[in-house]
Image (tube, rainbow, N blue to C red):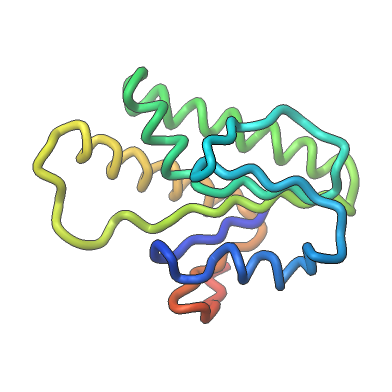
Length: 142
């Protein structure tokens, strides 16, 4: 599993496309920014899930933060199991860093921000590779 993070509009998606040569490879790209749902398992070799923080926001509106975190743990374990079934498979998760700046005034926004941070920590712990993209430049963290 590869987790990619960084600021909003800092080039994460373009970097992933270039890193994995996605213009040349068969892949599936699911984007919360475009209203896509988190998919079920697929037969494609590369799966990109973009906008993790948006899916987290949707979840914490309906369930408690700790339940949301456990749900993401379950989702990531499912995809890691899928990935381990074939060495050609790769799951790439892209999530914007929402931890910087002013702490939100609204309680529901603080819960979303905190939950996103916890989920990202869990993803980083389990990921084989972690990269941060700022202004189109990659910094490998793991």
